[in-house]
Structures are given as C-alpha cells and as structure tokens.
View 1 (cartoon, rainbow, N blue to C red):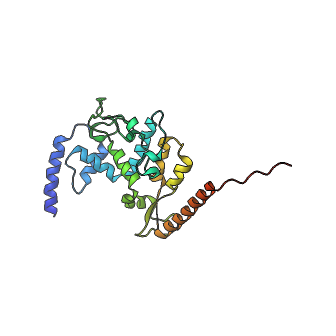
View 2: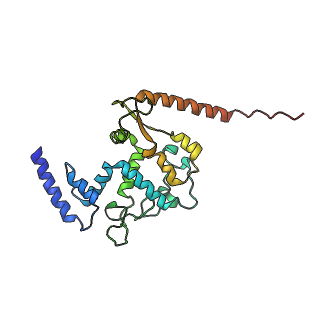
View 3: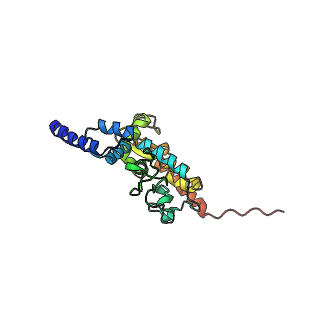
Length: 241
C-alpha cells in the first residue's frame, strides 16, 4: 500500500507542478503537500483545502456575502425555495437575481482562478467558467448538511455537550441553537448576510441524543402553543361604562 501511494503521489506531484502557476494560494499548497494523497491539479488542491476547513469557509463566505449585500428588491420568501425555511436564503441563486458566469452564485462576488475569492494574479479578469468560490461551495455543504461535519464541530466545541454539560458521546447529533423555524418566524427581516449565520458555525452545536430529544420536545410544544394562539380569536375588549 505504501509503495502504491508513493507512486501515485509522485505522479500527482509531477502533474501538479506542471500546471502550478507562479502565484498560487500558499495555504492551499501547504495543505496539498501534507495530504496522504496529493491533489494532482491546482483546482483540486484549492477544493481540498476548503473542504478540510469548513468553519473557515463559513466565515469567509458570510464575509463575502456582507461585501455584496442582498440584491435590490430581494426579500426572503421561503415558499419559493426548495426546502422552505430550512434552506439557507441565497438570492443570487434565484433566477431574477442571477449574475451569470464569473460571479459566485452564493455570495455574488467575482470568482478568480481555481475558484479563489481574491485576484492574487492581478489580471482583474474573473474566471468566466466558474460560478462558485471554492470556499462558498464548502460553506454551502456545511449549511445544508451539517451532520457530515460532526467531527469538526465536536472539536470546535471542546467535546462537551452544551445541553447536559457532560462529555459528548459517539451518538451525539448536530443541532441548531436557534431553531430555523424561529429564524423564519421572528428574524426573517434581518439583513441577508446576518441571516446566514443561523445556518453557519455560530448557530451549530453538537449535543448528546438525550439532550437533543428534550430540546426537540420543548420546541414542538412551543410551536404547537404558538399555532394554537394564532388560531384562537382574541378576547373582546371590555366596554367602557
């Protein structure tokens, strides 16, 4: 196995060196060289770097979104988005606000070589074949499938359950601190870049299954009570004598 890996890495490194430009993001290159299997192309090296650092990608994607801001006239309408309020609001992925190639469909900023978010090469020309930043693609995966990043989130949290105060078990689950239904109900008028934090690392936690069940039960009761109050007619005001 070691001989096979050494041979594969030698070929990948030779291919990477042939296509590597004079200027290349150093963090991505350092990461690529440290992999057990070296990515054979610069783009794969960049993708690998951001997949390994989803929390960092999350912070950067939200910062880029803040730089763009929401398009004029856009409002968050969960009924028009697959997944409803559980799906992160992404105006630049909606047909009326798409910016086309060379702009990231998540944050709206220009995409440069290898899916990088900055013009390190000084050409000033975005990549017209790209519609995602590599960091934004990694952030989107964190936002839409946080359970796949359980290991990273456990480490970030210090392996302690916030609900029970005990050590996280192998059966621990990913949860949103502020439930997404409450984000939709109470905070949907917030600025779009600020909304994204409710799908990102600031609102994600890993809790033990029993704590998660108790939290889910409390949230279900709260939602039921809210619906019941919304259906009940308000009591008539007393008449003045």
